[in-house]
Image (cartoon, rainbow, N blue to C red; front, side):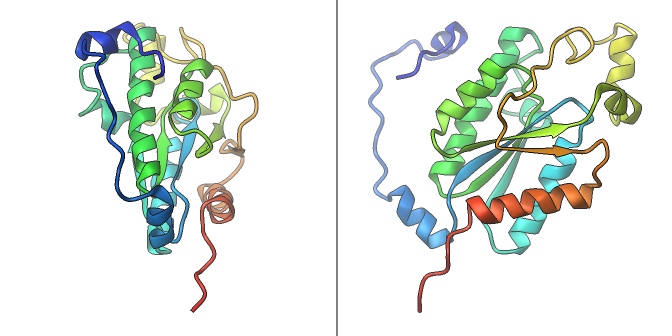
Length: 213
């Protein structure tokens, strides 16, 4: 069992847990879906375009017949993670929960596209550990000046005014991936070009060959 943060033990103090095996193997689910289950984890600064790319890619892949679902940072904080703030410990727990949920999708033979700033390398490594061999880290690269100029939610403006504390790249760090599975640059690349790059990556790494008649 992986070590869990203290906050997690306080929610579930019992360690007498015996996981129950599913009767349907992951390979059987994948064979039925004609795809490999996995996690496509999009990380980058606020305003880099993670959610835009994630939902555009989801729509394209769904129309192409794939089983796919987006986990978006803001959406999870509106529900599952609504009890968390933005301290370093809360950010860590936010990504831990997201990583575990994404891993469940992968076990079900679904491609989970996870769009989270996820600024700390150690937290992204923990999400990778939740889905060993099925986690693909995508760096959605955009420089800070570009993200501040876009500022679609007005968050940078509020952070610079001191209204938001611990904001990534303003008064907290962002640790870019050192060895991402894929990088897309939205500073110069269009949404269409970036989605095409992501789509090609998915087709190569997740699509199973059609079964013979």
